[in-house]
Length: 112
Image (cartoon, rainbow, N blue to C red):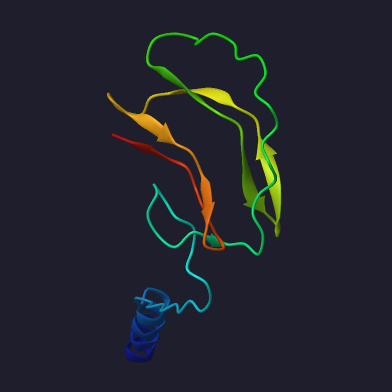
């Protein structure tokens, strides 16, 4: 009886704590361009024309850069993100705005 109980615990323990391996395969258009690299979002049309620039408040302090408003893909259409002040991620960084080229939308990114 003890042997059968020990075998049951060993068998149950080995299946409960066994390592699992998961393999995923993606099919379709490559993902978004992170930090300016990659293929971008496939969009059938260009974003709308940006509204005219209005009043921009002064910088909240040193080490901030203004990121102008831009349109970005959202659910098959474009949504507008108003301009804002952002803290520089590292010294000497500047913002490269998003762009639409060749049927693809490329995200904005920080650059040295």
